Length: 112
Image 1 (cartoon, rainbow, N blue to C red):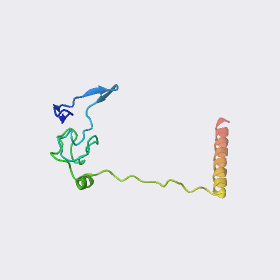
Image 2 (cartoon, rainbow, N blue to C red):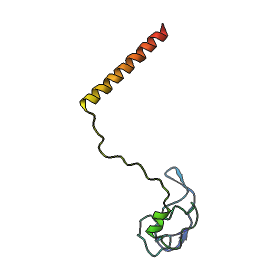
Image 3 (cartoon, rainbow, N blue to C red):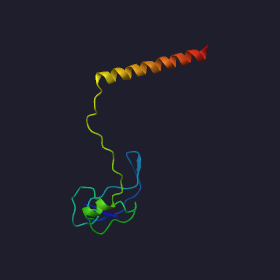
Image 4 (cartoon, rainbow, N blue to C red):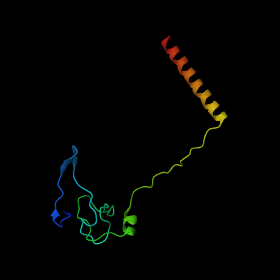
């Protein structure tokens, strides 16, 4: 249940939206009846809340959201990878050539 713009309670139902089944919606603080929070900004609850359960009576504090977060930290790579030197590029190209030659010779031996 959520509160619409006119202040009426509405129920969220399973429906097709753009041909895809939707079983829920994002709600802002006002729709959840919270005093604080931004209008038009999706409300966040701690990850400890089960899907489909009733939201808390008031907006959770930022510390609660951070503590409840159990998502693993993603590995962040730098924007720029180390570029190969001319010698490293030549060595890699030679290794690829040798691997292709070896594969060709092996295929040739198997066909004979």
